[in-house]
Structures are given as C-alpha cells and as structure tokens.
Length: 173
Image (cartoon, rainbow, N blue to C red; front, top):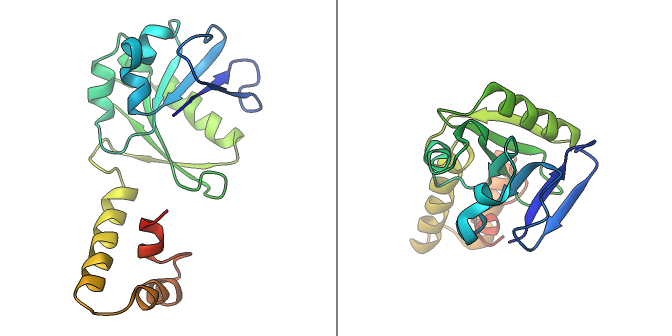
C-alpha cells in the first residue's frame, strides 16, 4: 500500500502518493498501514520532527504504535471507512501520549477533506469494527445454518435496518 503524504502548505488540497519511503521533507502528515510502519525502519525513521504519523489500523493499539516511535505525541489513528471516496466517516483515535495539537490538526484535515470525524477510544476494533465484525460474523452463521439465503440476509438488513448494503455484501468488499 502506498503512503499518502499531505503537504504542509494548504494540506487539504494537496495529497501525494508515495511508493518509496523518501521525499517527505515538506509533509505535515504521513498516513500508512502496518507495512509502512514496519518497512525500512518505519515511517518514524523517514519523517522529520513534528510530522504527524497517522495509522489506518483498527487492530493494533495506537498507544502501542506510538510507544515504538520517537514521537508518541505525534501518532494518531485515522480509520477511514470503505469505499473511502463514498464514506464520510473517519474514526480518530488518540493514543495515551497523542497531543492535543496532533488531534486538532488531524480533525482539521478530515474537515478539509469533506469527512466527518468522530473520536473513538483506543480499544480493539475502535467503534466501527467492534460493532461491525460481530454483525458480519452472525450473518455468516445465519447463512451457514440455513436461516436464509445470502440475498435474503442482505435484503433484511438493507430494507429492515436501513443499511446501505447487507453484511454479506459488505464482507465481500
């Protein structure tokens, strides 16, 4: 997965993708997944002081990620929902050491991108996956047990619960 580097001057309008861990001299925020955090010493080793390091993980503690960097105050979770261009929500997760400045900058970035940011505590799955994953699991069990067809299970959740798509269709995304 490439990194998304957000440029400091008018960072809302300037997003650049990076395929290598270099060229980050002018960025204000680096956003990446687990592989970017591990690759060649991680994003921490390749970003100047003061750069915010944002992770998209919902399965690894933001506090633990921050503790493995030289800048725990600058580490934050930015959990985008899929498909990113269509979904307005971004879960924002502070680690224990995440600074208010990091939080404020991240919230401003989300707003500038037209996203709605909501804070979640640093807990496994945060809010979204803590609720979503058991629902998907139950839909799979209902299919396995013959409670309904894939189409029926998805239709019940779409039409009866006002979900935009059924849990089985979502699991296939």
